Length: 93
Image 1 (cartoon, rainbow, N blue to C red):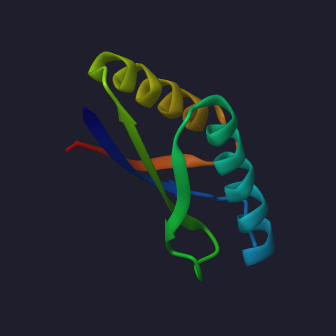
Image 2 (spheres, helix red, strand yellow):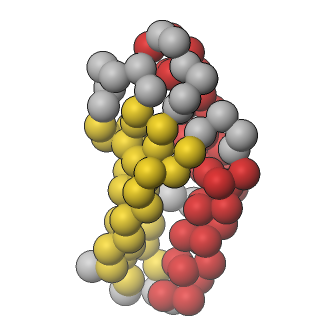
């Protein structure tokens, strides 16, 4: 059994309110949940307008499949036009 935990810090340069930030972050979280079988939650900077940390956790018997899923998540966030990735930290447990 393999477990992977990702911490993704993003910067939202065009956001001017917490409401705007939450709309974008919820959209990203929903997009990840719909395409990847993972647990996803906003874990940091909840009271900051232009920053967010998204946590992702996945479990699988196949490490290669987990790596493919992580690459898919990274590409989804990189392709999301309204955010910039500050840090993408991955840890296998």
